[in-house]
Length: 157
Image (cartoon, rainbow, N blue to C red):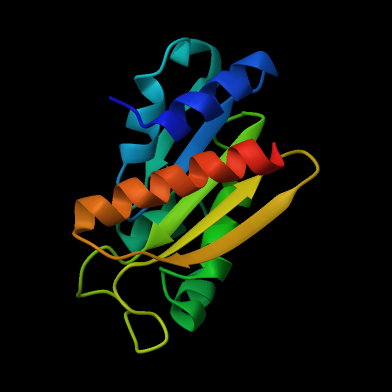
């Protein structure tokens, strides 16, 4: 069952006749799945792309390999690029890209510990990126991230 924030943000999108698409890495399609379970999901959700492995960020979304190497697959820069490039694959009013570290084994550092999540939201006139550090299990981090996406949608769209 979607969270209260996901439900509120989806109603907001439907009321404003806006559609949404996702490019998801760390959340692995969970954001799109949550938005697929809300009332009127067919009016707002266009679709999503799971690009968990960095090679998919390059081959499907066209993120330059040099950018991924320079900033890492889990970075603000790559997340922004994913959001902007998603528009060419899925025509929606809002594109949301999510990357991050829900468990160890990625590009974590002292400055970017496990729990660091990057979200970038793009509309026709806005491009907003945030970095948050969440605590908990991988699933808890994912769900907190999705609620943060919902909050961004309510605030900026």
